[in-house]
Image (tube, rainbow, N blue to C red; front, side):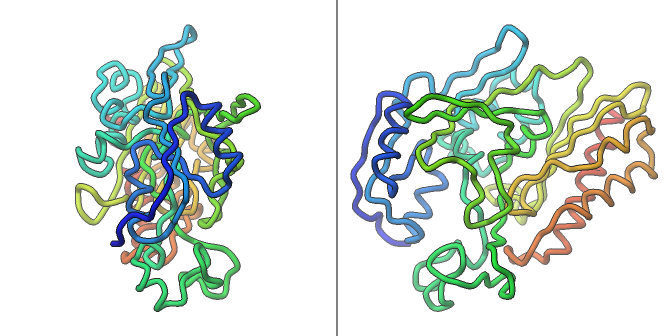
Length: 326
């Protein structure tokens, strides 16, 4: 770890001002909780001359219930707040579970929803000290021209490891982006692309402002499970979120979000073919096959890629079985 590089700290009064500061300085970086950015600075992965502190922006950490039953979450709300809010836990249990399982208590007290959704992708060849990366000729994600995970390829395979994105994907969330010119909404899935070196579609001058989670239909059951080396602090090797509607033990709708395996969080395709079927061994086998076909873990962790593929499928199967038997 290195000492933090020198930087200028700016404290905007609102998000429009923050977006204007980003537009004026392409090298500036936003900081809220800092649990992702600061370790990267200490490792020398980034050296921004300006940090834009969002912690003082009014309303950035708000939690609101809209008239239509949707939940509006400010991007600055902490994971500890989400995990500890009884109303959120009752309406969106999977979101509370994901927030409660992220990192450790001290991290959750500072880490924000926006930071978790926009956190940097991770790879065993990238998240290292400066001298370690230099000795390997750096990598495609930063300062090099080769992805050591897939040397013959042309893109970075660093994995996205946020916990809240798969839940919000399964729940059909949207995000509001703020620029100096105004705001726009887009589906959360459109915030990401499958490229570990540039996994966010945010324009350089945009700030993630809010997340809108539509009101869950009556009877919706949701949950989140993940596998990691240690049962605290570690990022997920695979994380799975499910939102399912059941009627008499039969699936009416099913949405599955995945994290930790691809360069972006993934909303599983093809779950519609499982509707109208009972939750039995045959359906669970088909769900596991869908997961294994669509996740694409690479050698971005010390854990074998095929293990992570199988774990993702097993987590989805176990979670659906548990939700169906609840």
